[in-house]
Image 1: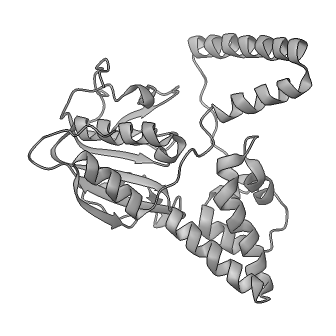
Image 2: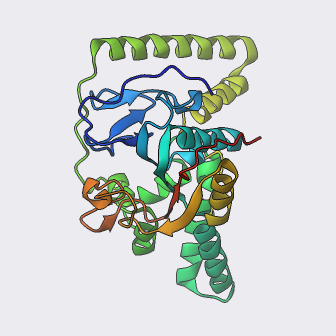
Amino acid sequence: MSVKSIEKSAGSPNRYLNLGCGRRYHSAWTNLDLESDDLEVISHDITQGIPFETASFDAVYHSHVLEHLNPAEGRQLIQECYRVLAPGGVLRVVVPDLERIARLYLENHQQAWDGDEVASVNYDWMKMELLDQLVREKSGGQMGIYMSRQEIKNAEFVQSRVGDELAVCQETVVPKVAKDKSVLNRLEESTLGFRRRMARRFVRWTLGRSAEAAFDEGMFRSQGEIHRWMYDRYSLREICRLIGFESFRVCSAEESSIVDYSSYQLDSVEGQVRKPDSIFIEVRKPQSDAIREVA
């Protein structure tokens, strides 16, 4: 994929790249996200390729990004990661672990069937965790509604799955203060919002309220919150292998081949895993550089 190359962040001393960083990034890395109001984060749509020269990084990382892309886009992203890595460089990928979700679903399903009331509540959660992020029609979905309850019977179990996201939903932590957006960003958002409102009204006037509801759902589902695919250790290994990576391994949140990785606190903070529902994997680009096109 041919993309326009841009310079790495001036403040990043390492040849490390964080894709789809959201609010979790470090100044020692070059950070990319779809939208950015921070000088340390470059705004870029990674479905259009990674905008850096071939072999320009020693490590590439993305967390809970791959599942938001369709399978073809996901393979293309991994291939682009291969391209921008230097020979011997490390790719670290973090995604929700489909294998673990499936095992917990089946375990609690059987125990609930046998009459275990605790497992019955956990079963409801696991079914929701498996499906809601794929099919939800509104932000937060059923999981958000569940986690916003004042009383959650299986709060400890849910927290073991989502980490501090539960506290955020229950407003037991102080949210980060949003940074002031630039005049340009506010103007862009205002213009885009106006165009969407006009399009929505046009759909309602011409096709009715059911079409308006379909428009709202389509706009939501195109904004990146939903999951478009799911992965486990086998599917990740096979994608990476076909593209040309080697030395596949499953890691812990703090374990990595990337030098001083835990100090950047991308996957854990003071020993607490940020997204405990995840699988953490790493692969290496071989010293012999040969990019394989994956259909």
